[in-house]
Length: 474
Image 1 (cartoon, one colour):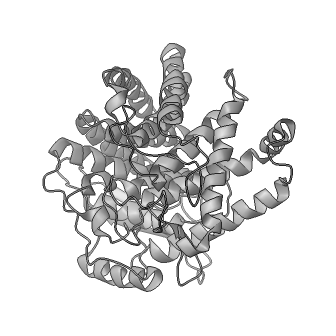
Image 2 (cartoon, rainbow, N blue to C red):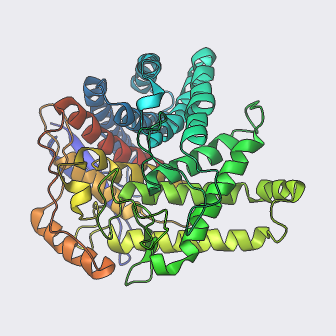
Image 3 (cartoon, rainbow, N blue to C red):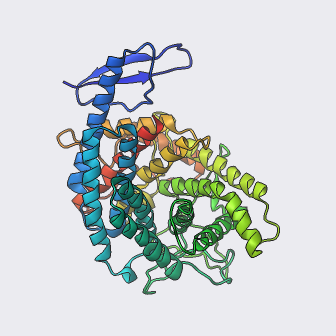
């Protein structure tokens, strides 16, 4: 019998209560702090049980990660790397965690071979964003492990392959697109399908450009300013759209927050933003994954605002650029997105993070792709909270992680596509529609035809994202 403990605090209590839950079916993921009224022995007991369950979650991922789907594999392994990084920060000297570190090293060897087996010309542009971001985290992990040779290969994968692929084949260098020029299309490099300038493609390139540039202090990256330039160009693209309030790309919620839609649309003669396919679009559609990545890209831009100002001045890009105004505008968007997530993507009833109820998310056509969104958003929200950006999603991430754990298959610790109560789901749809104005009556993932191992791998990565975020918040 496993004894698992959790600490619960309320505004009306002067101390925290230590509650014992017996049985492997019960597991909560709270903020753990050293408490005077809890004995060191009980704290150690809790810590040991918590670590054991996190290891069980990884062990299941190890069984299901090696499936064949390019973008899903890049994203799910990024979840694994972020989770492993959190474990190593929490338990740096634990032999079991060091064992996981070594297993991940071997998995990265296999993943690099897998990446090199593909013809980049047939892949969607956003696929390279997922692998590019994963490659940066892989380099960080491998350098910690002492494998500089493979770490350098992953850096090259991120910069010379993934980033360059997006720049050369996805970015629109023309000035003619209406109503907003530039941006990235999600078509293939061979040009058989131009695709759409949707949010995920653009925010991935935005975030990847900023993150590569931010490696500058630690890495000898040649021609590093080109990454800053593209991060800035992507910022301008998003900001230009957000200023055009009539198109509601950054759409307000009734509570005063805002969320970014799946793509910007403008339906008028001569518009370059009227594409409703690739993937199939519906009015009002938004995705959780986009919200987390956009928040992260914006905070990354805050971190390099002085570098950006110096670069703009040196290159005479924009004479009226003001770093303070730039900072205020970004912080304004961060506040809007924060409130939008809190009021529209977290259920008021149980505090669990939900996917926006649209058939385009849950339906049989692309549900297997959008399934991962909740995990992606938590991956970035957990890290952002730790960086003191005044974003507080602690309670909802804990509640979501708890729900994911308690609904797992207890025979093998496999996490599930759904981990919420149907009645609460129905209440959530009402809440979302009241905030957003549009919603479909859908809360079950229609992924019956999804390859089983891919489904297991994606669902397990959602859990790793949630658990990793919890560790980051400890």
